[in-house]
Image 1 (cartoon, rainbow, N blue to C red):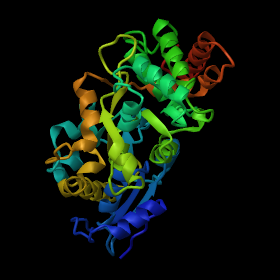
Image 2: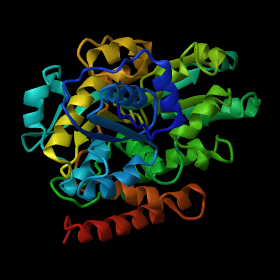
Image 3: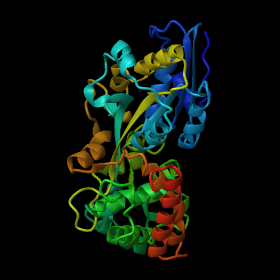
Length: 412
């Protein structure tokens, strides 16, 4: 039997502790090499896929928060370093732009009988990815802390900032409000969420011309700065992974966190049972009098590398079908808002589903969106640190985006 897991120690421990048994996945031979982000739901998927390993099937998995920075280079080699890239609607686009993922229609026809129509992500009529969970950043708050201060659960970002100011004055929690404000991808995502909450359009209609340097952009940055003023001094060091321990340690009262992390944060058997029992999940807040949540909807799924052999591609697709089998979702319903057949929403999915029902918009799957996201991540930190104006930060972002978009051929 040939099984290699190059993933985190957490995955190794998970795999060792689960009841998964080596499975007959119907794969004669091949190599399955998975690149993925690293959180519980994806650990479960990879662990289940790994049960397809046999004397003739090798399964490896690299679960890392750096997956987005690795995927284009790793799938550009021939053969690709990874046969499977676990992606989301944002991280799929760079792979599509470079032609690094193969159409999956034939593999779905042969091996995808378990899939539901809403799992089939199509571009130009071809299936390019298989979605298996929904995701969105939404509100989480500590019920006891807000009640003790006489604060009603916030419905808007203005409510959140007002509540944070009260809590900060009381001094009973280290950072009343926390957010994913680490420069780079996370800070850019927070801007996109807020900007769309203010009703902004990221691009001029029908063009690749960025349209963020207007009133909605300035309002979005002003709200992000108002939030930051209530946070602990190290707030720009926090990304999704860093905020988990902060929340579990009782150091925060409110956050807008990914729904994919909710199951772990409300787990009564987790690292902080008292905090978990006191954590309430709700839909994402609105902002500026808007009627839709200031967040974006995401899906997580997988795709198969163009530069994988047909044999490895088939083996990889079959292994991933095992990874996202209905029994995986049934055995771990709290781990994610699964899109898998038979899944019934649990309390951990409340925030995501409230956000969906409130009309949140999907994150744009435009070929040039990744370039704008990168430009935002590279050019907003100086504003947040008070080193330049909001107008200058947006102007710098536009300049950086235009340069990248021209190099990529999206702008003349």
